[in-house]
Amino acid sequence: MFKLLIVGNWKMQGTVESAVALASQLGEQWNSNKSVEMIIFPPFIHISAVAATIAETAISLGGQNVSEYPSGAYTGEISAEMLVDQGCKYALVGHSERRALFNESSETVAEKFKAAQSAGLIPILCVGESLQQRQDGQTVEVVSAQIAAVMNVAGLQNVCRAVIAYEPIWAVGTGETASPEQAQQVHSAIRAQLGEAGEATPLLYGGSVKAANAAELFAQPDIDGGLVGGASLEANEFLNIAKLIEA
Ligand code: PGA
Picture 1 (cartoon, protein in one colour):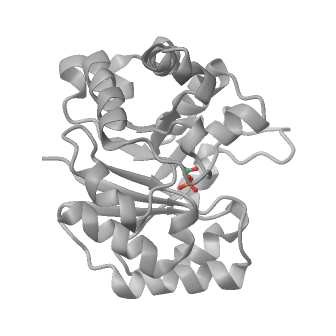
Picture 2 (cartoon, protein in one colour):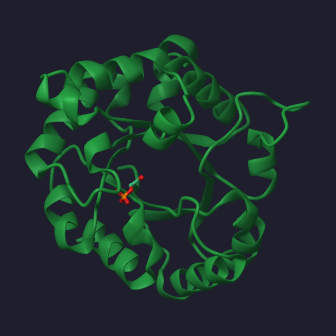
């Protein structure tokens, strides 16, 4: 049995002081646990302070984004090796905010995925449809095309060694959540797309997850954890969500 994952994406929020305070609260209260892994994604600039804060805890660290290039004259970018050097184990790739606000194409996402994996990071590949696409009945088609774009570049086996997070765009940061049935339907389509090689690939749900809606989502057979944005900025709320994964 693989580990279930609870992921906190802090986005572009907080000072070094608030990041360290949040990390230390989580570190004090999160007991290392055989079945659930907690991963936090601070802003890049706070990573080294957060890494030092959680060094003696069971919490893992990740980068919210990663360059597709290994090193060189790429002003403002952060490479996969730099993330490894800071103690990161994971990298988010293809978050809907990166795709929509920073024009990351599926091809770029695939290159980022490959760069992360080649450096030894575990990519968390984010996929999801817009409201219009859902209303047009294109949800599964859109999500499977986003995954296929990465498979074409990285290969099926490598995609299956990663983590996939289904995050409907209309649910990210909006307070709207996919119903457990809507989420499960997409997760089971992703599981089918991965086939046998993906039986143990963790599939996360993200989009306005909070303690009040997490239990029902996590009870779905193909939901192996959550990717939490807003609700991960408050230690007790995030810990309460994490506990619902164990239940
Ligand atoms: P949210 O963000 O929980 O605030 O909707 C989720 C995410 O962006 O991963």
